[in-house]
Image (cartoon, rainbow, N blue to C red; front, side, top):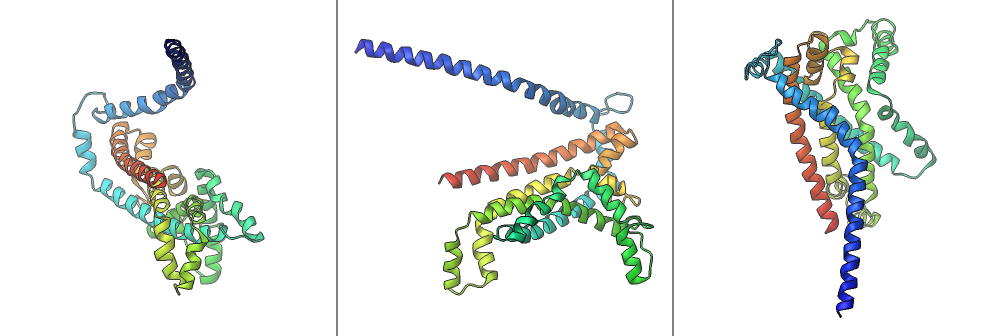
Length: 304
């Protein structure tokens, strides 16, 4: 018995040493990633927090920068535009994503051809797609504006008018976002058993009732995650909007992220940009926490 216990303790000690060696190797491989994370995310974050409490000379000013930004009508106009931007983008992406997800889950030759085509907006870099849209909507040579002029007989300047410029920015962003919604929702749709729909058809359920009582409840976790991810991306989107309209005309398309970019890298008002960046970071953290809890709840449901 003592020999058995000694062998067991020897094996346990050997296993513990091996586990310790594996954990050290894992930390060694993680070191470059941690250094990049510290250098490119954590250090700039704390630097931004420090700058938000200083003036241009580097002197501490307390909450003056926050009071100036939060008391500005321009900032709250930026917030309203961001909310409109997010809501419209999410709604359009979800609707078109559902339609495209239903299409790509079908089995046919044309669907096999369309699947990679639908991913093109997501693959193209945002700055490149913004330049493409800007070319299409050019007041003098753009194909879309020339077609509108041919139909109506009137010249249009889509990117030079407040309402139409905002619509153009929203259309461009949801055109880029819907492939992600399509893929995620398609993954949820493929998990639904066909037997459920067959039973609903036997019971006389219409297509609308099947959608609201079967499809929507069974893909709600996927839908929540899509909404949160697209919301977070849209809030932080500055490159595509700035490349398309530069926040204009005036401030008609100046969302919070665009204002952050302009104040920090165009006007070099670093302290104001830092304040806006901290506000955006707090909003992003809220959405990240919601996303984490939804993902955790989904994992618990899958285990049950």
